[in-house]
Image (cartoon, rainbow, N blue to C red; front, side):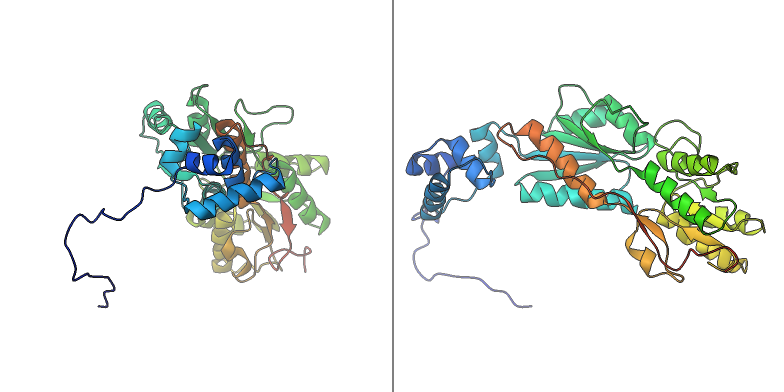
Length: 356
């Protein structure tokens, strides 16, 4: 084991001797002849600072060796630079990628980020109160019923933003929120399968964030609307979960039905299970059955056959949600929240014409 360090053969007196007090944001403000709010804007890269002023502040920062301390900055500026994310899952791709976007955006802005994972057994009110007690803001990932319930319980006085499923047309969440139009994306994916000559499209559903019916979620609604617009009666959706095992169980049932030629899955994990079930049943993809997933998880392009799927910008959703929250926490923040990319159908090997 290599150990690198420094020792001194000199005096063993007070180690604090010779150390200087760290420069504060107010020291920088005084040295550059501006307010500490202006120093804050320079540190955070706000555009509404004159170039001459910016250079003067940057010179003072360099001369004083200033390094921002998050706690000291919060006390000096009145801005609490912490965020707590409330989520029911950190493993599934959509949740994990959203968290990554939140973490990247918060770190770039000098905020600390904590995560509280809630379960059905938790007291949501107590969990949310503990998150609010940190003095910062809260971001709720509301992709499922538990997350949606947590969002409903966040007190009005707590700064809050959310990432949610696409709400029904004409309705918006009660708190600042971002979402992707996965309803329209599911419609487009279903229409693509119909255009390939498939007479019907079966759906393996993810659980909805509201209600209990498998047709309640926006992806299920988009699938159903596309079929009805084409004059096709939607078959009963199947699926009882989020993961590949749930997809495998649904895939076994669908594989036994020789009339099934096209399947849309609520996420790529379900699609992975469906592909395995079809393989075990001797149903070829895409020659016998076309399969489309949702989310474009990292594995989707590397399974055999590679998975046609809908690409969702979860990283962008996380960054946008942080932007919404930051505008509530820091009144000096003038930059608009970033806009996530629209969902995109990614064509790969698992979908093709009927009877290809």
